[in-house]
Length: 233
Image 1: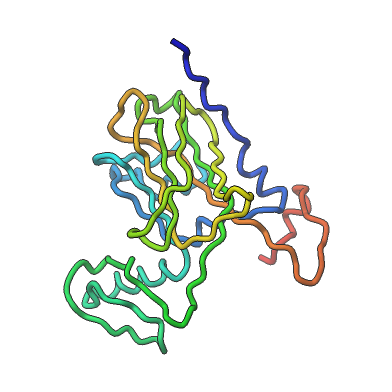
Image 2 (image 1 turned 180 degrees about the vertical axis):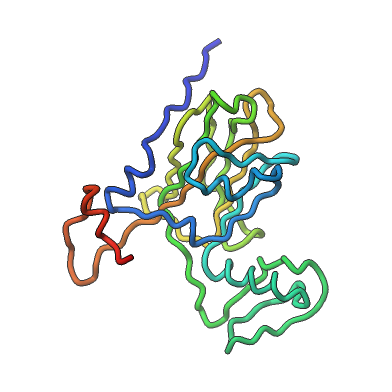
């Protein structure tokens, strides 16, 4: 019986950032989890510390939900307005008609008839896993899905991982290498090594392409010295 080759680690995502061709946009999204052990949640997924991790605390699949821009804003609006339950939210003159009954967090029904919805362009997803430390908590099968909301997510990637220890780079591009445009990304852990029940993920980063200047193309700032002064603080 042939032993599967171990999943090779990818480069540190900071190397991608230093090229000036992509930027990390995880801070522009609202993150949620299907479950987590107290003290091992979203904060640990996003703290840039490879020693911390998210630990699920429920049945599979274990989900990481990442929602961008208008959906994130609308989600917060509904959370802050418990009376607006199962409502259709319209961004018209700042008014929120609605009513009815149901789950106040069903913000996947949101619409914007004036066409102000703007999808986010995503190019690469980076996940850090460490089989040496996490063993049976390490994901062995991951599904990456995109869509407008929870009801129409479609799988665009499925990964089989073998004892990964390092960064896993997941391209979010089509057959023509064109980046994906979406309102939402969902990462689903379908299975763990050794049939483990709960899972660990140590970091997740999301990258979008950096658009060229409409005025003209300029040399990219790729050295550490230049990177210090590429943005206004």
